[in-house]
Length: 503
Image (cartoon, rainbow, N blue to C red):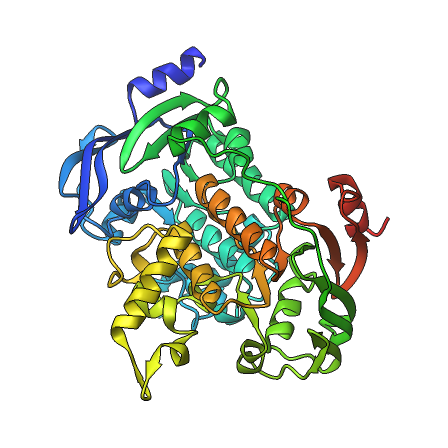
């Protein structure tokens, strides 16, 4: 740490002292200490449920701490509402983006800050100019009048970042900002963070992608079980050191193909297409196999998953499961034939945030829990409890709203829902996005176990280590078509990227 950095830290921009927050019997924060210097990128690391999101919600004014203190620029800070935080120069990009899907891109960008003429009329010329500048700053190429609800997850993430940057904040809090971004968009975002730091803006950067943390951070604070366990100089620490502090236990080998041996053909896809989005898709998935699909944003990976699950049915081609030719025209049809889908955007397309964990776990398997046409509540609770325990979902009780769980535990709950149905074909779209290393290890172990038991897994991922370490074979997609295939042991990062570029 150079003398200039040390001097800045002696007079922190933000100082959190002995912060506590409880939700019933759950201790979300248990005496957290945290300091942020001016013009510093400070990474906040920890497993899902460690307290990171609770701390962010307190800083943003959504939650009020039970005890402790927060000093901002040398003065006591009390944020009783998000408008208070923004007024102090604190902007937060939440994991769920906090955007209004029914409003346009431009309306979301200036909501609550519309430029006015004569105090009453919106200055549309000024608004257009500021909106264009904000979109250009993050490289988001969408029409300002486009409905936000129609944007992809990556586009919504960039829109949320553009809105936060347009607030000219002194502190920008980024909670998993790259979880929905491809490599190019991630590079662009990290470049923006470097520009912000150079201009004197402080950034709290929360990410489970430790390579990004070490690329961008000056210091790293690790949270575990609601406590701050260490603050490290990012230029002197190692990934192994951070992981040990995060999990507090031995993980063993998180990646690996186990002892599974692919069996007979389970899913056969031939000539599959949908308009101009999918073109002549052809592949097979075997029993006890994890088949990886890689591609950049917009390559057609998610549309393929939706076609196989009946959310966006194919208009041509052939699908066979277990040798039986199927016309998958709806999710109901797919589920009836043993196909399950864990979607990319768990908050929008997977979970019912205001319903409790029990309801979210059992909603796809209610007929199996009925007796005389009515749901057997005792049986439902037992099934939900067993599924949550098997998947290692950390929760206070089954009656807790699933939206209150951490991101990794939400993902585990969604996976547990579908595993209750014992699917033949399990399709997962970015299953570890925004998930910590401990939860990733749990998910990988579970996927290996269900594959060993005879199911076939179709794994769509942008994580290269995940693709190469977990999958038996790899398909590469570009512009709605499969452009390369790699057998087990043949895939490499260089080969996959050459295929993406058309080499």
